[in-house]
Amino acid sequence: PVGIVVAGAGQAGFQLAASLREGGFRDPITLVGDEAALPYQRPPLSKAYLAGKTDQEGLFLRPPGFFAEHAIAHRPGLRAVAIDRAARLLQLSDGGHLPYDHLVIATGARNRPLPVPGAELDGVRQLRGLADADALRAQIEAARAIVVVGAGFIGLEFAAVAAGRGLSVTVIEAAERPMARAVSAEMGAFFRGAQEAMGVRFAFGAGVTAILGRDGRAVGVALADGRELPADLVLVGIGVLPNRELALEAGLPAEDGVRVDAFLSTPDPAISAIGDCARFPSSFAHGLTPDGTVRIESVQNAIDQGRCLAARLTGKPAAYGALPWFWSDQGRHKLQIAGLAGPTDASVVRGSGSAFSVFRFRDGRLSAVESVDRAGDHMIARRLLTAGTPLSPDQAADPGFDLKALAL
Ligand code: FAD
Image (tube, rainbow, N blue to C red):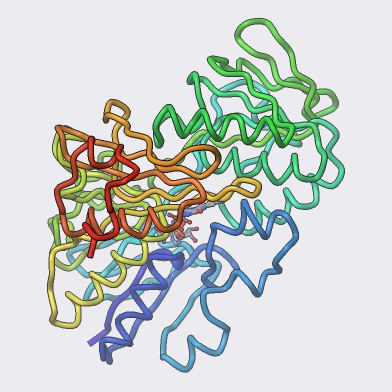
């Protein structure tokens, strides 16, 4: 046997390799990754690492010795460039190739580029990898005026860190509220207030038409309404695109993500896909997307899909059905989300002040729970959503209703 080859040595690819060994898999495992570092976690890149509160070693998923100890061949700085499905070969950027018995596409996602003039100027940055975070850490020190394009999770986490250092930060967002695609209006309003209390300014309903430059460096941002905001550092956080090219060029279906079935297999039984790059059927997406499939960008999804696929490849196949959950740290507030809600799902607020939860309902059924600084609600929500326990909007709204007892 030539074993399992994984394209992408991130959260999902690493988890798969580790879980395969845990599950007793004995054939070779090769992790091909185009980044230089050992597999690492990304969440701190926009949180503790950006703020200088943890170092590189704190990011690594395992110490260097782990890989040799578990006979996992990690090949850093190498890109998978094409798949020869007939010959079961993965072609590499150094001209070599790797034969596989099973190939796993775990290539993650990349940042969506900002399609305006000036986006290539010095001082315009995005945040996805360690190299981006290192560059930003250095530039943040020297920055006088920061503009963040996009009020999504990464933009807001970055804004919170920068504002926490006393820097001038303005967040520009096309929608009318922060995190509009991901959370309720109620939760968006809370985080808007929390960010403003940290000193962050917002421009909602605003479109960027150009980054203004002088001598090759960004000096400002031009908005569609004619305003010009000064900026010597511009962080663009307008979402990601799945790295699906390997699959597409090999003739595998990959519209907005590499298509896989409930077992995370592509139509080629020798090729699977996991993590940010994969689009899969989910019962939690019922009524949310036209065909009930989703692509989820989260640590939970990368880890659980790595585990699920490892189980199948070691003879214990099960459909992927893990509950989606997520978190975001902004200043001193922690947002936690369990489940998947759409923008039209109803909202019921439980609790008040700066610690509350928003229970979301779709077609009368609990779809998601967003909590700020209410970790207890989040854990209860995970149990209710995993078990599919019925909960009515009236029960969720009633502070006297014992949610904990319901979840037991
Ligand atoms: P990745 O971890 O991106 O790994 C994919 C790897 O494949 C990358 O190293 C990539 O360079 C490599 N690659 C791509 N193409 C090729 C190729 N052709 N050949 C070889 N290698 C290739 N999630 C949360 O749940 N909570 C958070 O708070 C949170 N914060 C985040 C903060 C930041 C700044 C970022 C960027 C992400 C955050 N996420 C968070 C999302 C989470 O990190 C991702 O969902 C997770 O890393 C996905 O794992 P993955 O393995 O699918 O992709």
